[in-house]
Length: 475
Image (cartoon, rainbow, N blue to C red; front, side):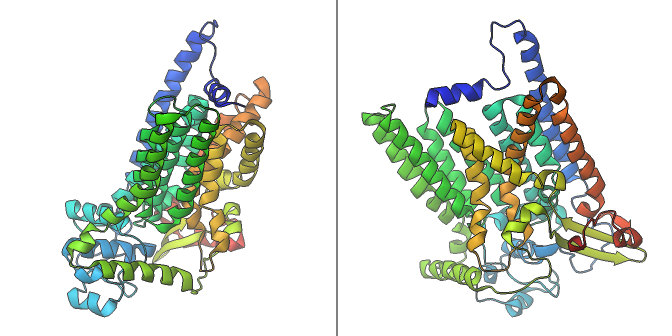
């Protein structure tokens, strides 16, 4: 299939010819579905922000030490030290002793500096702390914004890939996923990689399918790749995938004589500058505060070597760790918070929605079949987006957790939405309610698990049963 045929095939999904009698009703339906997308984003913003500071705002005593959720004791703590000018917060050789010398009031028994990841996510948390003070809402609000950014990118991707009905389904099932929801409300860097990476693939898709001014998308993609890398290094395989995808597209267009002469040279320069140089430049820019604190280029090299060494040699074990191939099966979610108070407990439990995650593998298989058959750019982008954040973990020897699949979830949602809509199409009139019914199941599971995804007080007896913990490995 040629590029023009592929673009036409994708543009025609869910649309009727302009001359057809149904064009009016179809256009009105599409407008309503687009407006519904904005409504979903608005509702998601409200739900994700509601009670963002709890835990611990509802029970923490005035003057008591902070109550961190999971790795907030490293990342939110370090962000606070950025704000307060603690130079040791950037030093991989600084431990708890130096942190305590600076101040003990923001420390718990597990607290220490976090330097094993690049600083961008912590800098965003620091900006929130600078505006609102050292409060949970302040260092968590950036994560909510990143989750909304990922949802917006998926929605826009869906609109371009297959129209408003498909886009709305993908947006809706992503918005009610438990892993996205819980990780957006905890001050950790995973959700930042997720938001930036979803935008990267949206931009790459625009580069692949737009007819004019395509080179500019390479520069924007490179800047977004840099932001993702500056949040966490697990964006590197995605960066490699983007490099290969875009280079392949340019080479194909050159072979088909779509790009020739100056146009080919212009795109080649945009590829080199945008996807090779610009990500590294943006990554370096995230360390401006590091150099402003008096650290040298030599210190920077040592720091990055220490990051590599730490992640290569970490052999710690953890009761909630799991191996990469089990993650889509939701076999071992992550306990992120537990607080007991009399007969009630508060739990924050990072797990993917079974209705979504259990369909990842069959949906990816179907997407691969579609790619082999039709070679549509949409299917290639979905496969690269998901696999780049999942398969590399097969070669990582350190302890791993299910939450590491988070950046792949937006692309998993697009794949599942494709599977559901294609199944509905195959069923004809009988399948018209399949997408709505599936979305309803996802929303129902969100409501069902909401108490243990947000730390609401629940009876200890309820936690002891199978209401939320369907399998022994979930405990």
